[in-house]
Image 1 (tube, rainbow, N blue to C red):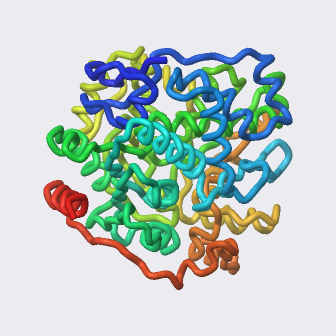
Image 2: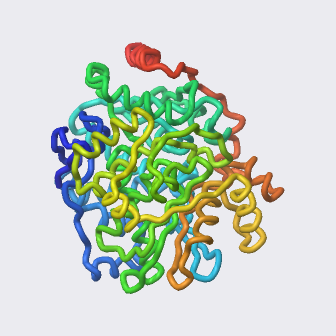
Length: 462
């Protein structure tokens, strides 16, 4: 299995190289050269299997010879051993033919754990047998950072620096990043929004002297390994409702497009997905683009669903790459235009996107009302991100086809929004009950590339 850049001029890499590299040297994102497919019999056999067994079947064709079968099975087992539910990604029913896929039973209570816990195990094994060490730098709107720190804390072969927007994540998200005591993990509060953090991260990857000097690696959703691990729960959810003999649809609350792009990969692999619905909050650039209005950046508005407060959706580049028939030059041109404020999508590419994705948005008031209504009608407490998904799914779903809405985080990660909507302040799980009693450790840093490089080099050289 070989991996190519969405911008067409970076070296072709193996799975291990693409995983450890993250962002391609031409600024693009790595994608598989070909998408392997599974037979209907292989998909049907997943019904009733453990999450770990399905994960092995789905991901094994993508990893080449990076790990042996026994190694990979062991990595998967370790990755999900700490999850708080035996099914790993259980479903509950919200209404006739509408289901909620709970992706918040991992150690940091968000869907990012499914990928990050596995990435941590894969990095440790790959680097350990090489005797190498890397510096991981990530940008987060809240959940990626806590999941990365949890996955890599205390590991021998990595130093981790997470950039998050100062004052723009929930208190629980912040404390999950700032309270770990291990010396190899560092939380950096950047003066700016998530798009600023993501831009500085890309700046670091494009500064080849710095990148090579610190052995920079990335675990944001730009990392193909992250997307790959998220493909699995589309299969477990769909087969539990009758796939491959029955079509299903998915609604995904998303800001950075990685989670729904994983659904697209599942569809390409043979899973019978009828609709892939993109759900956005008031920062609705993806919804506007998919409705034919072009991709033009605006101001990021802080919301009660902060993990979706994004105007530059990194993984959308992967979708564009396929929509433009894998023309790296065309994608590079679009990304250049994005740097100047935005771009319009060609008619052919727009049709290709709309053949795969539909979209909707939820305002702040609609999100709050959905949280209120869900508790009253189902007894379920939704986090605001999951509520965005439920609201859009209710509007767009075909009642004859099962709709699965992804619940991306535990309501206790956003207690203020949930309490405002329901009067109930959701408690943290028992293992996190003392989170607000732990000491915090963070560094506030200017939204400036040189300041960030200086700080990271200083830490690494002490």
